[in-house]
Length: 393
Image (cartoon, rainbow, N blue to C red):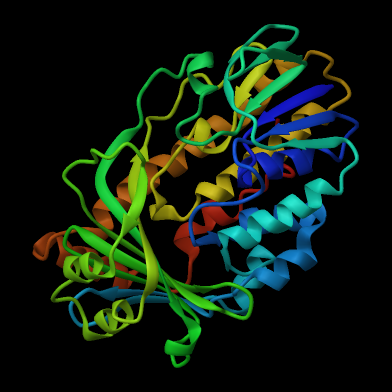
């Protein structure tokens, strides 16, 4: 089949690589002039890293991944530990692979390199897609120059501001969360003494996640979430300042403030948006994937992971030789994924409230719950144990 993928980010490239294992003719349309990714770090949990290995990226992924030793939750004002989970041999035995933290640009690079080696995939950059025309037997992609091109299948993997989503009935606007994320980096030379942890510092109305990323742990990645009354700028991301970031966490632990004082420019400020789960992902031979259909807040660290899961399940549905009806195959993909992604979206939204509790009795109850729950990461087994390679389709 001739397949168009709109968007060359993590989801689009993972989809192209997964589909390339079958005899499809695939074209990826990307607006930018080359393969690139905005943002610093991303957490890849075993449910996604197993899939990257299955796609032949195991060695390349191991070269860019930092494997944390622990996941630690700390109190905002004094860094006291509320909960700690070891990512140890028992975790790996249960989930096959450890947690991994990577630089987004490194992940996109290894995906892009793998896709570029596939003879049945064409990458078209600097190409502006403005919409799609879904049909039952084929769909058309419309371009900014007024031309269009027909494909057996069109996949919108073009992010939260997708131009394909409205074409299949997703007319809702992105929902502003009331928070913004400052994304910043500290060079490794300033934090050599830090343990290799994923650390979540929770405080009133805000929290900070930190972990090492990059080849040879080149940087400590900081994601600092704080309230934002509105977002009036045209872009959903803009450059911030270290001074503003520091001011937003005044009074927090000396350890955090020491990290913020070592941040290197530039600092970027991102508006955090999500959407309600969609009842319908596609029409006819057009469908959606990743943030185009299920954008989520980053409080489960699952946005990229869910897009990779989508890619593998979609490829499985389209490789089934017993299905000659492309539209039926896409509905099977959507049915297999909608419940899973809606659950992750909802959990991400709930975690915002969990992480941002004001000091008081509810916060004390939360901290007590954290201390009494069994050690380890078992509370997330439902996330990590999902297997896109075997889930029923």
